[in-house]
Image (cartoon, rainbow, N blue to C red):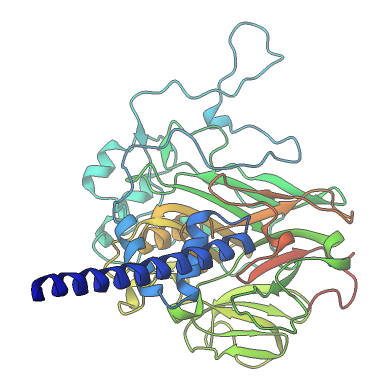
Length: 456
């Protein structure tokens, strides 16, 4: 009798525990469902991760992401680029990677893959990820001016890499209308690789250029997509997401709307969530997070001109800035990779340089142009090296993982209804910044048509 009573008590206890677990799981499922329904345009994986972080489960997400992204990129070269946008104007084909039909009919020139075997490697810059050592030098078959590339091999064991010789003219004050094309690190180059194409025009003048390239010769599967613009020819503004930074009363809210919409040129993502301990966040006269000395900073002046620098160094504390956004210390400064100078910084759960994922960054190039970069899958060292290869003077990491890296230009300039066009096929909803964003972002406007007071 006593044994039967004990068994019944156990069954009752297990039923109660089971009921509590079921109720908890149902509650979690309901909460996640509500969150996903509130953000229908974001991918499910990102929604679940954001929901978990909003509910104080960030460390769990970090561990899962580190586990999911611990495989280094393949060495075998990618056979396609990630550029997802059609140039808005006719552009010259890349002569180094096109062949002309030899049939006697010279009216058509077709862009086809080079008939070159085997694969040729021609690194233009020594990096810590892909140092140019004696072995690599023996396989470089490019006959162009690459003789100086072998003189930098002595720095292959350091984390500071030299600046490309083509970008040594840092003292110039004239910003070029179009960036110089980027030489391919691998031959045969893919069609259009490294060739800048105009993707956004205002009054027939190109304002945004984009291209895609395989930046790391020893990890050929890595693909980077870049967009450049002259920061003095656009009005940059920072918009505030519903979660980052959250809050109410923002002039620049979670979406671009109103009279500013007609002048919209492009937009791109911001930085890390605040629980990852990024630096300062100042906008619209409010200090959401205090600025940190020595941190990379995207700074926007009152007239909408933007730059990337280091707070307290190249960007002074004096002056009235409209917006300031810091993420972490600089990845690249004065044209050199400097991320290794900060061994205690978490670059996105990346201690030990063992997390490889899709990452974004923004930099001021040595020619004065601003450049957005999305590259994957890479660790933090590879991201820094990519910025060096691409000619960045000072660069900072932005958001990472999934489809958070994001850059879009917009159709139908001057009209009330606009449509986004992402530049990379790994990015998400092209209208994210028109429909509402959970995180802060940056938008570029035409200063000549932007109404006074339309944005902060």
